[in-house]
Image (tube, rainbow, N blue to C red):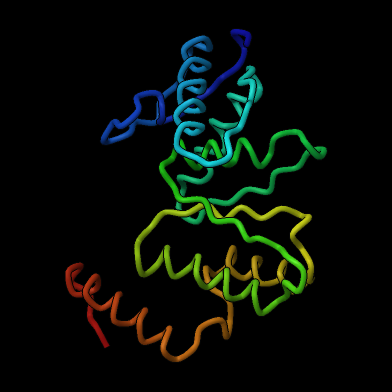
Length: 187
């Protein structure tokens, strides 16, 4: 870390409510906080991540935390294989207190299974009000329509013809109470 680096974040005080997005001038403190979050992550997950939180990694996690905390925040992370994109995304999701959702591509996994997985993720976000990170790697693309479906989610927040009638009824039931409490007209 050098003095020329400018890092911001809202995660320096774990459990703070509200979280304030502030400059983090002390790189040593940033590294110590990241190391603590990593230790906490490793203590609660089945598969630990043996990462070394060097300066650039800490900055990347801070950026990913900022991005995922924004409404409809999304990022395309580029880098060579093994550079830590998924691991840093997992850590940022943990720091932001989001659930991580990642598909498991197995033999026979196709567009129907992907739509089911996407629906589960979107229903958790919408009906259960759970903040989630949808982690999708290029190696998981088995059909180009997956990219089109994700593009629809990023552009409009939905995928055409994804939901069955019973899903739409559940969404309407769940949202009705929230609309009434917010004083919105329910049709």
